[in-house]
Amino acid sequence: MIYTVNIRQHDSPVTVEIGQTILEAALSQGVPYPHGCRSGNCGACKSRLYAGDVEMSPYSEYALSDDEKADGLVLACRSVPWEDAEIGWLGKEDFISHPLRKMVCKVAAIDDLTHDIHRIQLEIVAGGPFAFTAGQYASVTFDGQPARDYSMASLPKDPALEFHIRRVPGGAVSNFVGDKLQPGDDVRVEGPFGSSWLRDAHRGPILALAGGSGLAPVKSTVEQALANDMLQDIHLYFGVRDERDLYLEDHFERLAENHRNLRFTPVLSEPSTGTARRKGFLHEAIRADFGDLDGAKAYLAGPPPMVEAATETLKKLGLRAEDIHADAFYTEAEKIQLEKQE
Image 1 (cartoon, one colour):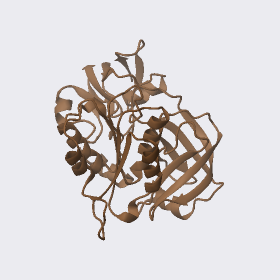
Image 2: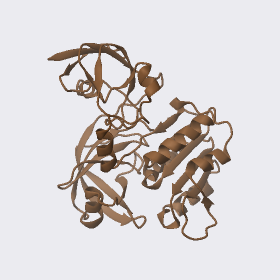
Image 3: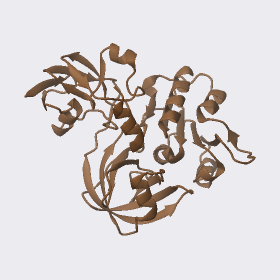
């Protein structure tokens, strides 16, 4: 059985096979459908269902609330139609569409940024050129390992792709990277993906909020904004647990010295010893530092609880949902738990 789905922003309908999601069908047929994680976690493909019936597989409440679902909204990446349907993605804001590339790369360098975060630099050997926008991510496959999503920390113009990979207790891939990956090894990279890319036409203040290895896409976003001569105030907050979890602090302090519109603030949630740095949770620091944020844009990356707490705080401070850009990354264990929820 094949169903026909009309997409309001596209001239021709797409055909969807049984068991296929609307997003899968649209992308395979050349429709530049806005999307991010493709797993029901980010909300980038949030759409309005105008006609027809779909079944949605499990998803995060962060991506689609119960009220939104009751209002007729769905996630295209989780929606499997049971009859012909009509759908349209949300928002009038322009979106980006880079060619999807499947590349073979080689490890050019590996080094440690912290006790549990490794920096991997990859050279593209075949399948390029690779175009992306600062803030996006790719699916990365190391030899004999399942694919994982990692954000680019590098700029689109850089000759090498840079990723920050945190070692997760019990994580097969992150432990492989930390223990066995060597310079010269082959790595497969597919992308780009993600909706939390830099909107360079925006002229209001920018809040860039990073937790842990979520600093990778935020680094790319902030550096690209500065390279583009975006002159508005840019507030970069980096939330970690303890002193030993901080990295690239000198780098961002130098950037702030050279760019008067950049302010860099590390925040420690559980310092093990006395510290002169800011203490508390990242969303608490935002609430203390800002009043009305109307007209600003925020870019968030990090553990889902951090992203969700910061998102709620930003909304309470007047930031519109469409001005909050985030790709929340879940560990494989968290994804499995999510899939068990109905």
